[in-house]
Image (cartoon, helix red, strand yellow):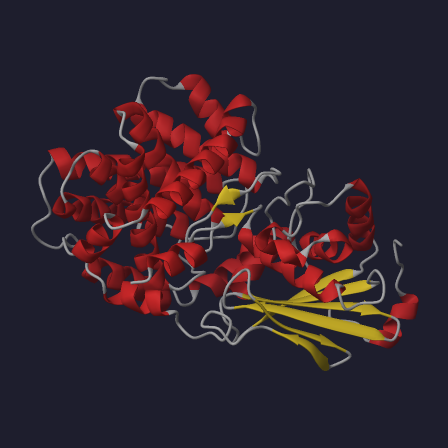
Length: 443
């Protein structure tokens, strides 16, 4: 397997939730081809992008949430060259303009069927102009921009851009656990340094959530009221604190895993804290992190990028359990057992969109990863199937994929219906260019 390609594409910095991040990226890419600020923005989103982005905080914009405002900010001041950090340099003027567009009804959206799970189409409208930009297949992949229905940019026909499965994903789908264990031990010095950068990045965000309450303050409250010398509780509090900051719009990037920042928090923070307490070397920690990302990626290869199952719990929780077991000087067989224990615990956890309470799920998954490690290294090994989870990683990953893709096939549709019922949010239709004379512009 080309590990450099895997880490370059699957483990990268992300600012804010990656779904509104993808929307902001598309909007900023389209804005380059518009002669001035848009007067109306219309989004056409996959169900998963809509669900995950509708209620989550926007980085650098305190109190603002959702795909609509992310699109407006991306169009007004985003930088597409920064990828999933496109909103890094937004300012108060842009925030005021975006808010005015929302209040004027100049931001609309609809959910499309029969699209890739990762799909965000952003149409920017001015008098006499229409620019449409599309992000698809991967959160940071702009595949096309058109102006007045003429293509002005077409993304490279690469593996992720075209929707084809990258070679490393195909290999992950076939790999057994021993393969992943060996790959983690084969990383070079450059990869070690890169993985440790992710540790510094994610722990910095966690520390911010421990110092003051962000979002629900899950990590802040846990740290203030639980034993400080208990590694299991420390892992839960720090992981939740980082998710608190991220879901509430903190202006600091985190290192993601498998296209998700929350996956990255779960996959990285538990082993990072354990390595600190257990005084493991940088090399030992980096190998554990590599295993965490590989296990997370292997499970996501079976389920797909965005799913009705909570990936930061199921996939990244499994990855963290394997990493913790490696750091505890456990064997590959024990790490495989730890993964099975986590899957047994959190397999049915659903994803009902990114929002403040995701910190609870990140904290739960991180704590279960630690418990999985303890059971694997000190308990009785699984010797037979327990429900749909058994001792073999490849069979378990396949089961997760089938449960998510087939068993939960109707879950996303039900979640969308419940979300709309709860919030009573209408879905306006897209205006035509001639309608823009009637639209109030904030600029």
